[in-house]
Length: 78
Image (cartoon, rainbow, N blue to C red):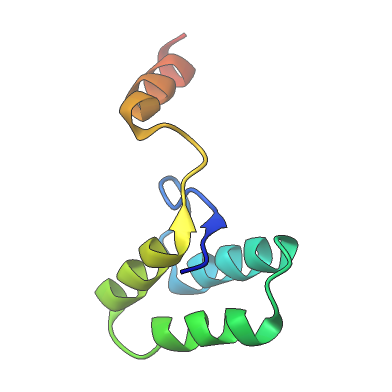
């Protein structure tokens, strides 16, 4: 399954913002519009939980989640 490099953590939780971020990154990574549309259609085929699950399936975080909390802490408190 194809995945885009996109951290969902920290993004605006609005459905349109999430789908827009996915679409923008997928096109940046040379996905075809048809491939993007298939994922977006699956996102819209259910409720908010379905949308999140679908995006999680198709996104790969760029950061190491083991250190993610430390990165946030360092940014906020240093």
